[in-house]
Image (cartoon, rainbow, N blue to C red; front, side, top):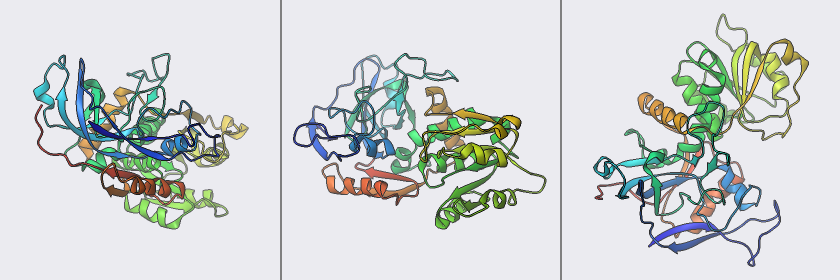
Length: 368
């Protein structure tokens, strides 16, 4: 048998979106048996994303009470289906799980008509990582880079993939590589932090914005050249004044806020610069201004990423020995619902700088 954590309805029925907070519930379910080309993975750690909080608030599409929570996870291979070509290759290996399916390698978006389907808590994909065991196709895992702990590996998938696509695939090599000036807005969230780590490792000069001076200083310790408080008057001019000699504008902005981001980008970006938008936490609308048209600014939407991009991202992390930023690790077991609830509370209150991880197992030698 296997323990797994779900959300449960209150009084046996769904609540109103935004007016409910579904409780966590622990269930004992049959241990999955790997079929076909599936691997059986004993999960050791999983991490939260904002979508998990939205699910508990009934603010995320496709919600179900019948699929375990969370999309990010890592563990150890302990079994293999009959059609796995080389089960010995996987024996006892630590693996990181691709957080979604439906998107193989197209640069434009998911190839499948159903779109990109993320693990955890919805009807569109029947798997989640907040459980002891999971059976998953061998093509949907990557070996964990050896420099990462289990908790760090579990912190990587969704934010790493989203940050990689926004920075590398969307902003492009010329605007995000060596010598480029990149602005990452709203530093502190998981995607923004991964975009910072990736851009710095690629040789770009990275700057950040935040309403917290403490977060700006932490970002500098992680490789940012500097940052400004976006609540200060004239912060955009101050930011331009921080650019290295010879640079008058930014090449790319990696943005998760929306709102007036294009208005700011028109002042901050070079002619032909790129603003890569992976979220809109401030407002679901972004006015496209004539100033942006006159500067030939590209606005590119970006969300999640393909299986190919996931592999590229993990390889980059391995090569450059990048560590995801982890805010807090709860080392416990899945029966500790109160402790796991505490991680959700951190997210609700915006306390985290980086990822919130629950570590409920330890990797070690295993036999198929």
